[in-house]
Amino acid sequence: MARINDVGGMTGFGAIDTSDDAEPFHADWEARVFALQRALLVKEVFNLDEFRDAIETMPPGEYLAASYYERWFHAIRTLLERKGVIEEGALRDD
Image 1: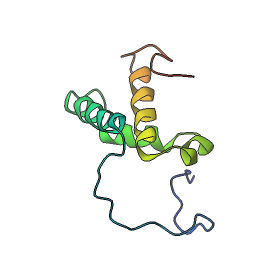
Image 2: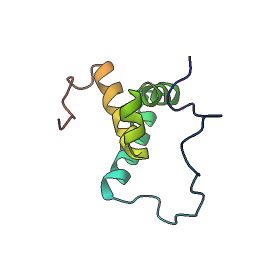
Image 3: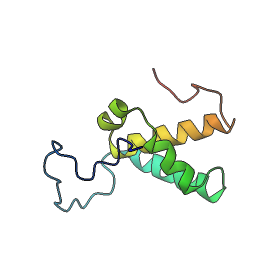
Image 4: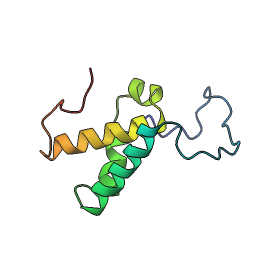
């Protein structure tokens, strides 16, 4: 079963922007999410396969509407809740 991130061969997504962006992060929160993900991997709270799966199983509408690091934060929240590290909804702002 194809997931929303598997868009190979699909049409209608427009051209890919391949211009070089010198900035790795566009906001401070993105750098924090990156650091948090790295720390949780080092502490073996989850692994890369679990992290990728958490991103790829996002509901299609949420996945398409989210930025790169919004997807990362979604995966972190999902995995921390799933593993009982935090209570469900503890890191949600909705």
